[in-house]
Amino acid sequence: MHKSNREIQKHSTEYNYKEKTVHILSGIIAGVTNVLVGHPLDTVKIRMQMTHKSFAESSKIIMGKEGITALYKGITTPLIMVPFGKTLVFFAYEFALKHLGVENTPDLHVNYTILGGFFAGYVVTFLATPSELIKCRQQMEGVGVRIQRTGVLELTRKIVAVEGLRTLYSGYTMTFLRDVPSYGVYFGTFQETRKYLNEQIGESWVSTFLAGSTAGITSWIAAYPFDVVKTKVQNRQGGNMEVIRKIWKHDGMKGFFRGITPCLSRAPIVSGFTLWPYEASKKFFSKHI
Image (cartoon, rainbow, N blue to C red; front, side):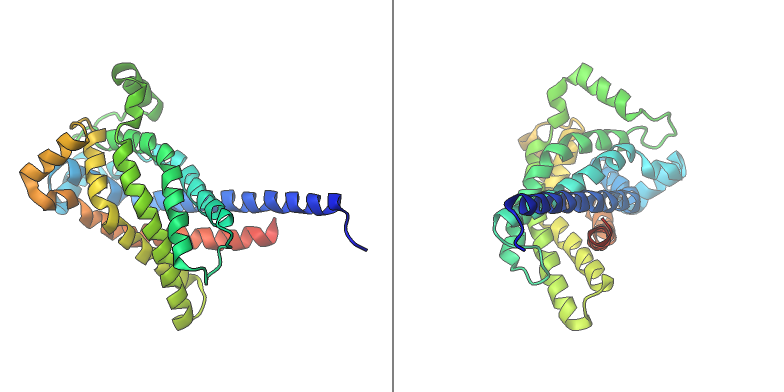
């Protein structure tokens, strides 16, 4: 017997609900993993961008004078927001592909993955800007000393009360310029690298992990200068052009890549532990939900 239109519509609705649930759960798992693995090196990166000290000096000050737990300063905000952010990224990416009329398969053409990445980067910027501002401010608290750290809600209230609500979106332009091209490169590199590795070593978690690691490195190299400017703007060092002029005057071009060592050290690990859990979770939940 042929199914009625009502039955077909019901099946379609159930499928869409399942599909969205799978993306949300997979994104949350990927986001939590991302934060737990990568936050310590992110703290060192922020310190290098702000204090102009080397990787070794920054690490020594944090662990020696502030305590090893200081590597996790500011983790509360990303631990809450990044899972939602990663969920939003993957959801926006899948949404873009769907509206481009293609499916997210291993042989998808790279042009579609780049366009999907651009859209995902644009969408997540609205969430990433205030989240990273709070995180950066917390990571710069008590440099070189042990202090009672300010909680997320208390710090947010202080910022809004003293600097105004708009301050939470300070650095939005640089976050946009960082994330839109970065996610395009990220998903494009992941797709092409995974396709190549699947042909060479077969489809497995190894190829997904290595492809994710490669994607993390290339995406950060493409966008890193914008991240340096963003960090300084969000830590009240001036407006976009003022910060750019200061960096160029004091450090030249190398100033726009300050802190890239811990960033590139964490990128392959964090990205591998983002895309691999996401793909694995998506397969698992697709079968069991």
